[in-house]
Amino acid sequence: MFSRTGPAAIKPDLNNTIDLCAFLKNPQQHFKCIHIAGTNGKGSVSHMLASVLQEQGYKTGLYTSPHIRDFRERIRINGAMISEKAVIDFTESIQSFIDEKEPSFFEVTVGMAFKYFADEGVDIAVIETGLGGRLDSTNIIDPEISVITNIGFDHTALLGNTLEAIAGEKAGIIKKTKPAVIGRSNSSTKNVFLNKAKETGSPIQFAEENYQIENIANGRTTLSFQITSPTGLQRNISSKLNGIYQVENIRTVVASIDLLNELGWKISEDALLKGIYNTSLNTGLRGRWEIIEENPTVVLDVGHNPDGIQQILKQLNNCTYNQLHIILGLSKDKDYQEILSLLPKNARYSFTQATIPRALDAATLKEEARKLGLEGNDFTNVNDALSYAKEHSSKDDLILICGSVFVIGELNSIG
Image (cartoon, rainbow, N blue to C red; front, side):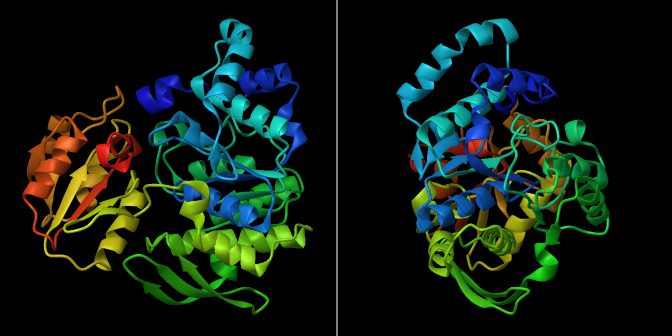
């Protein structure tokens, strides 16, 4: 599994997925879908889009990765996880294929999701890529629209070490004549998307250029702002996902919903606003600037690459607290020196690790951090790190746990 071991688990082509889906009688051809890629924000955008479609009354599938606590979080319909029985029955039904072809964990999971969505007769499914786009196992679908949230440096060993190369991989989800929405681009990546859209004959729009944001209010539990569409329509948005970085993600969602309506889907303003506001309630999204305790405030965020950490730091600038404590765990394949260089030196650190082979061990992380002026203790278990931070905090302090979805998944307190 890539989640556990990293790049060695990747099978960099679509052959196994194509063969598996053929074995399953191509379930991906039996439901409508939306395809989401991007370096950061693709999980939030996927969940928000699914929530909006649910609010409209569509039977909505949602496929995301990785999971935090339960494998079944990856495959949902109208927010409800796939049953344990369905997981077991599917796996047993393809055992002969597994024995013969030896597909990866992710390939099997993609096939499971597609078969489940087809069998259950979803009206539409929101499908998040696992990694990249062009060669991602999900990339055998023909979506209504393709959405790319943004491009940053992550998984450079697999996707390339320039923004243009990474954008090229993500742009691989843009399909012939099917419209695409780009959440955020820059001078390095915009032409990559424009060239791909020209090649595929796909209409393309850049949400950041077309939708204007004003009057952002970032409260403790709610984010609100005004967004103006290219037609001049003004919407007052409110979301319980109150990380400031969600402004960009919500803009991408609004642009995508407007595009779906242009294509003939019927999604009301009420469904759009309620879907954005109720995302976590509707779809079970966790770990996006999620406050789990008070006095002191304990916050979880799955930000785990340089761009994600920069977004977290922007959020911290909007927060009021006495002392900042950061519990940090990273994977070995991340650019941990770049991440550490971004972090504030006046925070108190607890370095930790997930119990997976891919984790960077806490003692090494502490030593690398010390070289950059970040001081703290190391803990092999995140729960011990949290206990220590709470014992050494006042009620007005803020404790942030970040750096790895796998570390957050091992917290006893998130249930």
